[in-house]
Image (cartoon, rainbow over all chains, first blue to last red; front, top):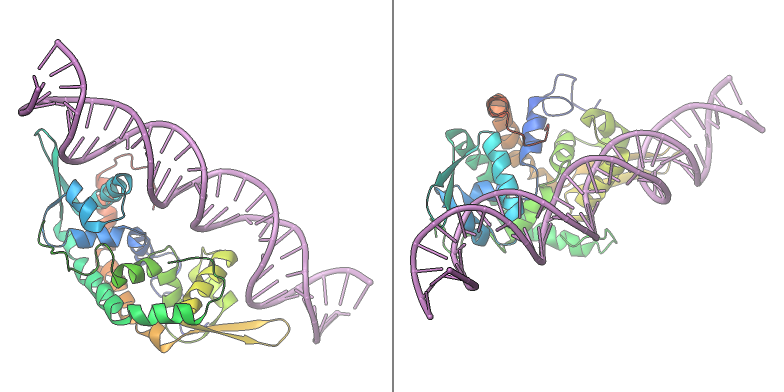
Length: 126
Length: 126
DNA sequence: AAGCTAAGTTTCCGATAGGAACCAGCGGGT
DNA sequence: ACCCGCTGGTTCCTATCGGAAACTTAGCTT
């Protein structure tokens, strides 16, 4: 075909695809990054991240918890206090995420330049 | 707050967030990976990737083109032939993507284990 | 003339995303 | 005694996402 052979991982059915789809949504990477420096409370994440709704945060956290990437710690206090922190497994994702953020810092502007160099009607305002 | 100071990149308003949101959708990373070994035709990508619809592929390719990550080459032939390839900018994304796939290869199974260790009703079958 | 081909596009429709607003439990002010 | 508000979470509702499948275009084969 074009350099790939049927056994190549990542394309079609393979565990890598599952894993990539796990983190390839709007908030997962941002939330993981927000937890990268230690335990953080729900409300702290809300203002830290900026732009995420409570619902999406809770939903993202639940999914990460179910996938074993973070751990939830609810303290029986009033008002409630809930902290989230990376598991050792989750911590292994921080390096790849840092590579992405490094790329973004280095090339983000080039992407934006390309965007308004082609003012084609792609109808989206990323 | 919890180790972050206001100037930290990535959280809230910053170019890194824009860039991460650019690639944080279901297909972008997979398509870029599919192009990582040289020019590929539309139809080749369809069967190479497996599971993507023509519509989503076209849409993803258009967006990547608009962001300057890939280049489209349409040959005036019948039946049509269109090849896509990474731009130099797009090629810089391959390394971060490889880190993700390496992570996935190493830890994908652990994630799946965690998933069916918590059979909580998260109602999704990633 | 009919049918194939490859890349797109369009239409239809179910699934998902995501914001606004609401809920629960309890301590404190008045 | 009553209401307020703090915090994490959930419900409701709509806009968007995204897949399946039909349609388009134009030259070549049969």
